[in-house]
Length: 492
Ligand code: BES
Ligand code: MN
Ligand code: ZN
Image 1 (cartoon, rainbow, N blue to C red):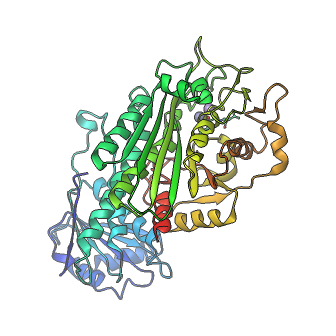
Image 2 (cartoon, rainbow, N blue to C red; image 1 turned 90 degrees about the vertical axis):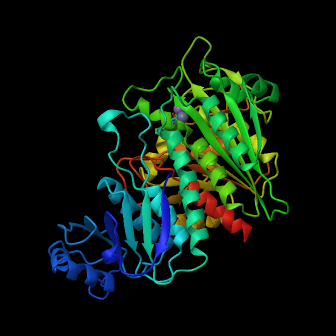
Image 3 (cartoon, rainbow, N blue to C red; image 1 turned 45 degrees about the horizontal axis):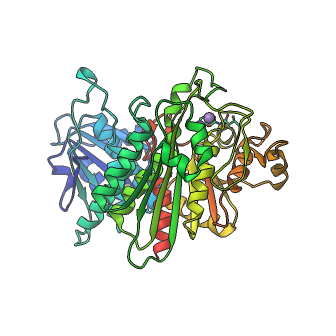
């Protein structure tokens, strides 16, 4: 990300930038000096247009005007942040992202961003700008390539401070880490196979001096990860098990994150219908989250031990593919009867969770695009999560609020455990179709040993239908920031 952000004082109105964006608090339109200055320079057109468009500074409102040569900037953009919650990190981050996205859309190379609200954390603003400027253009050529790229951002603040530069720097690095997740999810499945995920992990380990262990197909078999192995049987792209570790000297806590890394989920022999199958390139989003998270951890260097674990495989139909009716052992020792080869994620996760629980974490968190049922329950913009203990649920909820991401707690309904009983093995891996997200969570719970555990079904929000707040269309990077906040809270 060749994005440069610096603070500035003085008059944003005269700044030599392509686009000027101004945060406007609700009802602050005629009180904010920047707005008055801009309005004067535009001969009264700003306030007149605000009135016509009924722009009052409500959250999510925006007003975009051309300057017709009256300013150095080509356009002016007002962004509403509301009244009561105008200072909340999530809202400011989202507004900054909207400004950066608008700049990209207007082919602006430079952006002046006026922050009339005092006491704003510039890390949050830098995160938003880095996230909003994101585009995935790797596979575009010629005319499809963007004509300009946002390079320079000036933040007009009340008071410049010593700490500004460090805050901006860390914010940009966190955004970059989340964009690593997005890139991995947007990458097509013919390019991003399990070994490619391992390659990303090795790159991170090398760059940041983190520990790494990668098991290939043989290694997965030798380790006894029989469920992971079974899922991968039908693919020419061999599976990988990935373990990244960040271990500071005297850590306060040990957190372990596990991600589902299905680089493509065709459904296997229980093959999925064609419409929407291409979306299953995003079935490695949990893995993407774990890798992005480890990159962010490496940048932030919190005093918490963090492990990132990925079970990577491709689910394909083939002569060697696993079948309904098969029975396999697991790393935990329990045997599992296969019912539907499209419920592959919980199998890969089962072995990864057993491995992770053996690290004796203070908290074990998994993220997986696990069930369509979770999307039916909560829609496409909210993750479902399951926590055995209320305490950990509250920790996740607090983190999600700061991150501005939507997570809703789901119940582990004990009666449903019955449905996972098999006539021929210890467990079967699917239940009936009602409460499909819950039965998946109950299945995973069988494999976490004694570890305090949270399961996040992120199937909905990992892809966006349209850009909104910090999320672009396509891969969003959802969950990275929430998990990072959990880690930061654990360091306190
Ligand atoms: N990766 C899918 C879940 C999914 C579906 C994510 C749609 C995002 C969008 C998962 O492997 C799957 O196929 N789950 C099945 C489970 C069923 C066979 C018990 C599902 O949800 O239909
Ligand atoms: Mn599936
Ligand atoms: Zn899947």
